Length: 234
Image (cartoon, rainbow, N blue to C red):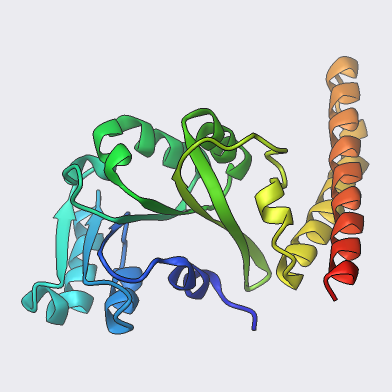
């Protein structure tokens, strides 16, 4: 069954323990986690006071029962080491997510599981994770209103880097959503390729054409590999 972005995030969160939702905005994620009894407690944080007040209205029942706590502040800086089991950062850019993890090393090291959903810059995020002692243990693609969202489950540990565009971890997920995403990316690259000839700088144009063709070839190879794997696995 196809899941939307938030449903996919909920399905990947380990049950039990304390969860922090960074940049919680309206508080939908912590509310659903508590409503479905996925965790014992949620710490919902946001740099925006108005957003946090919206969360307060939604979570007031759980705040009263001491299962939810709201904290105003920047990134992971409002947390304490070993306070949180699972960290959720969803709806931000991949570069910003990397910066938030980098800025609070003592907090980051103490967390067991990370659920990360970049809105863009997923390649940069994967590169950061692989070069800073993280491993992506699972990836999902959620589709919502014709938008594709990459959602990563991350833990500490070494992982051999693969292609940041479509990591081996993502490609090993043989869901139809991943197939759809690869086809979408092929069309996107082909469309860019049609317009790249308008570039004036000849050297940059050649480099961009080469890059786009390599990405298209890579996508097509992954689609073929996935088709073969599905056939083998029935």
